[in-house]
Structures are given as C-alpha cells and as structure tokens.
Image (cartoon, rainbow, N blue to C red; front, side):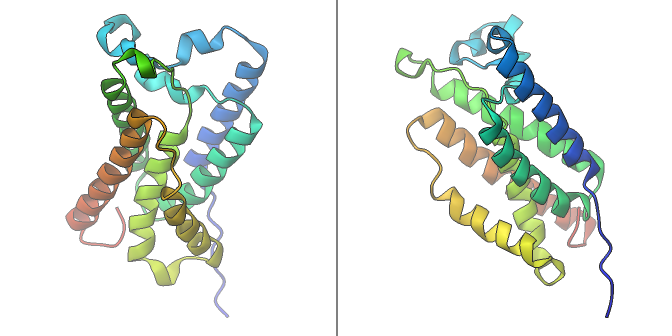
Length: 193
C-alpha cells in the first residue's frame, strides 16, 4: 500500500491565523470596523482605497471565521499541493480586489449603503481555483477533498442574492478565478499551476 504524503498548506494556515487575530481584534476593539470595512462610497474617495485590501480583515465572530477558515484550509491544501505560492497570493489579492470593486460599483445608491467586511471573497476565489484543479486531478484527491469540492459547488446555489453587489462580486470572483486557473493550466501544460 502506497503512503500518501501529508501536505500542510502553510500559506493557508498563515492566512487563517491572520483572520483569527482579526476576529479577536474585531471582538475587543469597537472602532476597528471604521478602519477596515469597505463602503460603497469608498470608490469615490482615493484616501479610502486601502479598504479594497483591508475589508477581508473584518471577521464578525468565530462562526464566520470557522467557515471561512475551513474553506481556505481545504481548498488551500488542494491549491498549495499543486501550484506555486505566487499564484495563491495572486488568487488572494485578485479575489479581494475584484469582489470589492464590483461590490462598490453596484451599490452606489443609498438603498445598499451597507459596509462590507468579510473574508468570503477570498474563500470563493480559493474554492473556484481549487475546483478547477480538483476536477483536473480528481483521481488524486483524498475523499474529504472531493466531498468539500462537491459541497462547495452545491453551496454556490445558496449564495445570498439580497445584495446585488455582493452576489455579483462573488460570482465575478468565482468566474474570473476559474478562467485564471484554466489559463495557468493551459500555460503550464499540466493539471497544476
């Protein structure tokens, strides 16, 4: 019987630890949200453009942190064992920026002047890239990885459609990360990136 090498997704674990610390800061420092949350009107204020990178650092509780971390850990494991670190960093940054920009562009009216803060865009970006790599390497995946990918695919159906900007941002992140991963696979000529 061939032993499967255990791989620890170090980048994903580091990201999860950062999000955990952000969760603790969110719990104990009431003004933290004023610094990191992304508001639709931030698109017009150049001094607030840093929020396009900071909004994933607002995690509203351990429950949200747990589910985002679970997705990042499992999908990150699939990604990190089959790709280069720089592509995972690109996936993180692109997911954050694409989701944030689309969210603010579509929520410019006063009806949806709701600030956004959550690592969900990163989770969906990781999922989309891991899904493509997982499909290409289905026979090599562990059973729990297959289960997570199937559940994640089903979970896309249940993404909240209450806020058009959030929904469109999420769908754009998923679509662009799928295309990005397919292009990288085609470029390398392998089922990895």
